[in-house]
Image 1 (cartoon, rainbow, N blue to C red):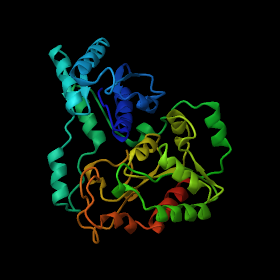
Image 2 (image 1 turned 45 degrees about the vertical axis):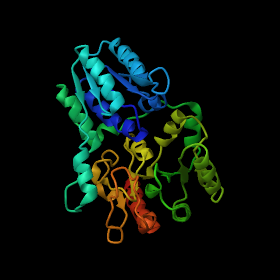
Image 3 (image 1 turned 60 degrees about the horizontal axis):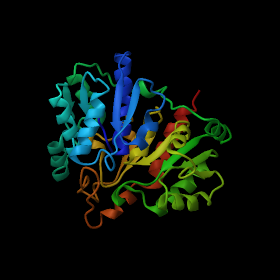
Image 4 (image 1 turned 45 degrees about the horizontal axis):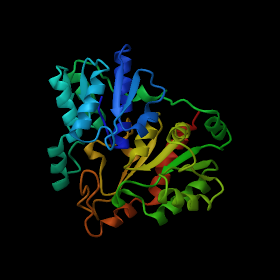
Length: 343
C-alpha cells in the first residue's frame, strides 16, 4: 500500500485496513508512507510500516527506484497505489515492470472540479475517500466491507503516563482541534474562544485542545490559561502519546482536517466544521452522520465549496465560518453527549 501524504488521507486508510483484515485474516500489509504517520497504525499487527524518505534517500527518480527495490524485497503479491501522484506513479511503474499486479486510486478529479463550478445541494455526495480506497483492493480481488462498527474497538497501545492522565481527568472528555491547513477552513479565534467558554460552562468535564507545535501550540497555551478545565495537548508529548489520549475522548470537534479522521478511527463521534469546503467531496470522517457536518451558510456564501481542498478563498469568504455560530456546535454536542450518557 502506497500513500505518502497527507496525514488526514493516511488516517482514512485505517477503516479500510481493518476491513481488509476482517475479510482476509491472514493478510500481510506493508504500508509505505512518511515515518511520522507510523503511530496511526500502531496495534494493527498485520501492518508492517516502511518509511518513504522522499526528501532523503528516496528523493528523485533514482531514490524512487531505490524505494521500489525495497518494496520488491518484501515479496508482495500485489501493489495498491492509494495516492496517484507523480511519485507513487513512478514507483508503481517500476513495480509493474517487475511483473507485479498493480492497482491505483481513482480520485474523481473531474467530478470534483465540476462541483466547485456548479454546486447543487440536492445532488448526492460523491463517493467517500474510504470507498475509493476500498475499490482499489476490490480490483485486486480482495474483499472490503466498510461498516461503521469496524472502528468501534480500534485502539493504539497506551503507556502508563497516558492512562494516568486519562484516569485523573473529569468527564466528559471533549476534544477540540481548531486549526486547518488553510485559513478558510479554520474557525475564527474569537468565536472559538467563545465556544470553549460556553462548553466549559455547560459541561464540568475536561476540554482537550489539539494542534501542531510552534504557533498553534503557543495559541492553545494562551487559551488553556483562561479556564481551569481546559488542557493543551499540543507539544505535550509525542504524536503516539497524543493518539493515546485522543482515543479516550467522548467526542471531538474538528475542522476539515486530519484530527477529525484520527478521532473517527477510534469510533468516536466527530463534529466537523466546514468553512469554504464541503463534505460532498467525500472527505467526511468515517461513519459520521450528516448532522455532524456543520457547514457554512451558502445563502450568504454561494460559491462554497470554493475549491476541493479549501485553497481558494474569494474576497469576503474569510467570514464564511462566522455563519456556524457556537450555539449550533453546542446544540449538536448536547445531542451527542446526552445520547452517550443515556442508560
